[in-house]
Image (cartoon, rainbow, N blue to C red; front, side):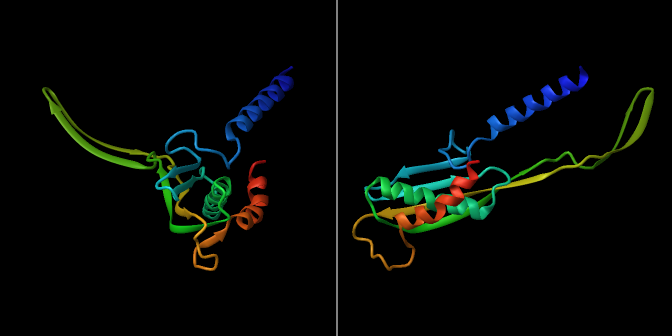
Length: 167
């Protein structure tokens, strides 16, 4: 009976974890959330960003931002897009429950005293990445200029990596 309950509890935990993780390449659900976002800046310029979860490699985040830029270009009827600017930033989350030390004193009638304390524990640091691209679309882009990408080729070349990350 106990083994059956433990097996049921383990299955339930795995099911919850599977639901919580979800696909990596997806629209961001909220500002600062994981996934992609794009914003129309002018008639032919967009800001495209992709924020990865903790544990998603920087290169993956950068590739997913390019994949989203290619997807956006194709959906707008553009064969090519130019990356006008690109920035990848780390977002760091640190815990501060590591070792601490304190010294204090106090007095009050009729008592006085001192105190020395030490607390132990382990903190952690988690890093995730966000890539922000400013892209330009349009038929007048020179196809052989620096930072100009063929949207269909980018999408075809990165599609296997995106599909593998969805599992």
